[in-house]
Image 1 (spheres, rainbow, N blue to C red):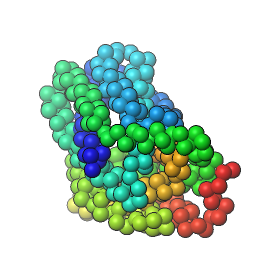
Image 2: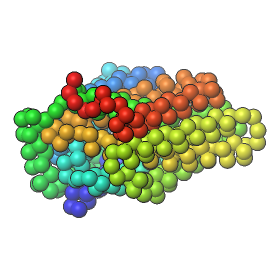
Image 3: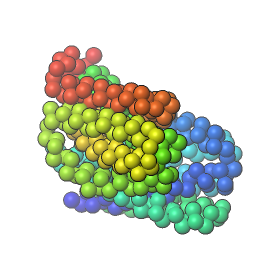
Image 4: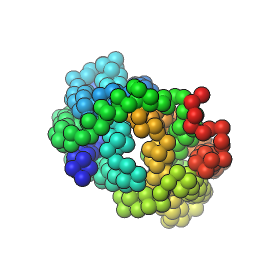
Length: 401
């Protein structure tokens, strides 16, 4: 319980900082740093690609040194980088700082999951991760709300203060991380030794790599909500623009109240595969709802369809995530769990990196046919995961190449 409490408080601090960044970073980069939107987008894309590599590399570091020191060093580096944004005045400097900030955030995600994989067993791992995800969502919302003050003031000083506050919050997250129980770090060190002696490489585990690739496709749904849905609602439906904010609040509420409950659907590998499949079926329903909301008609009808679509999307998100977490934990070799979780998190990073292009070029650009195509991608990934988890694909048995 001490471990979960420490991780909870660290998540509160770091995720509140994330909420502040989500709200003010774009305006900070344009108003204070003086960068064009194209430059900001290109820089964040480069940093996102780099985050794939750091997510993977962090797994090996966790096996070698333990997750706790990796978390502490990464938090220190990220907090310093966020503060360094305030000293940045060129595109090159921005890209460099962004690579450090986003890369070290990626390292922390891998280290968090690696720590859970070592400190908990069985259903506890998924349950704890679900509770931490609820804390993450609520804290992001709180950070976004706090950032409204800076947005209301709208000055360079206000934006700079918000960025420095985010940096301070990330550094504050180090305090509970330093109090993590000693056994957590010792467990990591022990696993590292075991891994060096005989832990399997995830890069030679066909089943794990396949599951990771399928989950990367499913993980595009996060950017569907934050990129595709807002663009679609404001540019292709009769719903008022404020609907976007209300829909995001609805998503936060559903995740907050039902994420932990969704873990009860997952007890083992077969049930995890079914959960992923059922989650992607809900994502298909969401895609159809989004697409139908684009038909000409009263604003109230469009809003109703969008609310139903986001409800289905949110339920699909939490159910598919619960199943994906179970598979990522259960199919990992305990002797090299850090490396396995590094591969898993790298897959998620890849999915999120390509999602904006995929979502905008299908759903937003093509309308209803694009929404149907995107839903088909989700459903195919879910069906593949279910087949893999039920043992139909005997060739992907987890044995080395």
